[in-house]
Amino acid sequence: MKKKEFNGEGTMHIDTSCKLYEGKNTGIAYKTIDSNKHKGLALKRTLKKELKKDLNVDYDYARLYAICIFYLIKEDLLLFDTLVICGDEHIPSVKEYLRILFEEDSDYHNKKVISISELRGLTGNPRLRSYADGVAKSYRRRALRCLARQQEGTSLNPVKINYSNIRVLWEEIDNKIKSVSGE
Image (tube, rainbow, N blue to C red; front, top):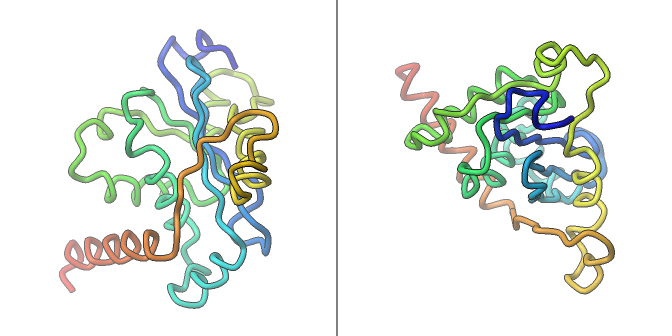
């Protein structure tokens, strides 16, 4: 997709390689259209298994997806105006969780967040694919390797994520949801 196809706005695509519920490593990455910058992370299958057991991730993969997106974009909010999220999980839930996580950040609230299917409708291109598809695949395959082995081909910019990082944000979302509902 060319930048001009979407009104000249800085656009960032986020995609996954292997769904979160699959028993494989999952790569999640973003790529900006205008600058070709990318960043990603990989969730090891053992980490996903542990999260599923302890946090009931089984019922809320959208929350896990939002937490991963948060860690990917929190330092790069100035790189884009529109965030295009691949519809691997329930997009309205992902958007709501991101809103909760970025509650204090006015830079995020000035961004447009849409799904890839919404972008297909806006551009009139039903075959439009996520710009970050191949990048997510690279992070899934190489980000968990040692630095010397991961640098075959395109250089990666991996975000380190672990159980405790995810758990902190998972509980933060829980607390904010409970405080809104009055529990």
